Length: 171
Picture: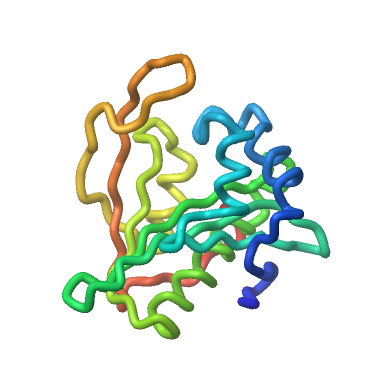
């Protein structure tokens, strides 16, 4: 269990699948995540190198955040991914959840670098990540294939341990 300022992160359970499906299936979230059924099932039964956490706020699961860790000592780092239900966005929940997980990965797991890779068109997410200290590395061309078959660019951002900034009030 990881405690943030206003959120609590706990390891996802199989019983979270339906709520994750609801979160990922909301049109404002699905446009960035793709197939909600597939993503929710994968989040609740992830591969060994991925950890999924349910984001709880006010006793409700309002999103999910994931880390994918590279454990090779020379490259020890982690990638992050997050989704917050549209009804809970704009309350600082995403920033608090990412900050909480990043702090854990830096201080508790010994990582020195984190990455996150939103769609290049996801301006709101990119603003949030930059406020937390993430810096753009570059555009990954035709990075994501959407369910309709179209290809979209992604933006790779990274964050070093000493660059993490506490979140503001809005995310």
